[in-house]
Image (cartoon, rainbow, N blue to C red):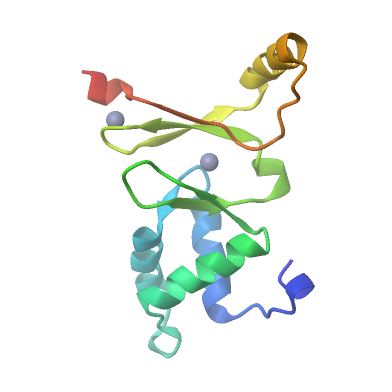
Length: 137
Ligand SMILES: [Zn+2]
Ligand SMILES: [Zn+2]
């Protein structure tokens, strides 16, 4: 995917992809990735926060990473491998917790939208905002 854009697999890009791979099911802020990186990389390959931001933009552009924009907090990132893109997100407005919602559950919703409005929803993930069980307690 990087090659399609004439980009190389640098140690920094590789390290970030590995972190995201090891954290599948989680949605990381750039700050989290940066912290995990400083543990992972040796001194020679140390990267600054600005580089992490730039790298994430690049990885998003080539389609390796997907970005989840939040309401009041920093964006979250996860791997965007084709077979893993079909899930939606439940986002807690109080604590920022992100949970994944299986796409199977929204098939019916897509069908209703198509039948009632003759509108075909694309495969883009849906964001649903609300309050998680802990915050409701
Ligand atoms: Zn919450
Ligand atoms: Zn997700």
